View 1 (cartoon, rainbow, N blue to C red):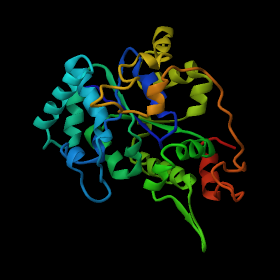
View 2: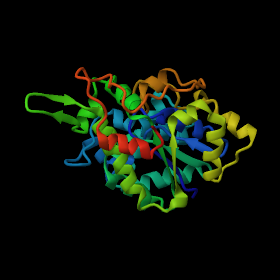
View 3: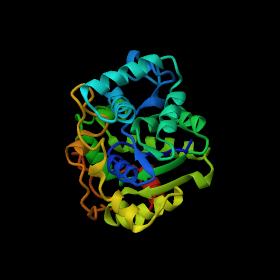
View 4: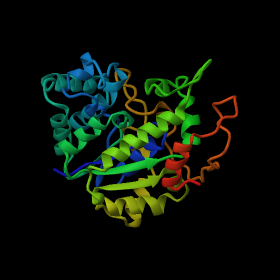
Length: 303
């Protein structure tokens, strides 16, 4: 069984695009968001659990249903999604690591590539990845805190920030503050990666991939033990060719960021990187990034 490659990052950090690009490598298979390690047993994706690992809602299951439909049924239709539900029902009492191992074994020798941003919400979830796949590789994907914060606040009125309980609370005010979530999720990733052998981890800024994709995708491929020839890199330049780079059947529409699903074609560009003392677009009071956020961003190569 070939060890998978996991992307770890807060949401809105280029994960959908980079996952699809890497997944188009001839030796890889890019999966949608499976969300499997958010829970311990597969049935909990349906019935939910209480506490830190709570996970409810049909959207958390769409990626798994689409993946099973494609891998076992050869296409994504209402019929194959129904088959995927039956497949899951037979395995409902399995621990989710075992479920993922079966999927990885099914696509062997291709390298499974997956990103579920919800994994990085809690260190135990990421530990589940390593427990199931001790030889897995982990790509820590970074995005500038101001750009990521602006982007995440534009989705469902900052729902992820609220889910992370990322509030700045003063004597007479309380505001959603996405930089808190940016810092805390990236700190979770750093804490987890302290437990991962150095050879199995890589950090890369998403802006660098966007600006010079061929160079940086080639570097990721070499680190992952994959081909880095021109043909392989050209395939990675076409994320829109992924079977998951579109909306799915009505019974499993998502499994990825809807913005990506609506426009998955990659257009090389050089993202504007703001200075770390720039005004925050989601604040009306002139506040800037917190010192601890600036310190972490400096560590990641932003100045």
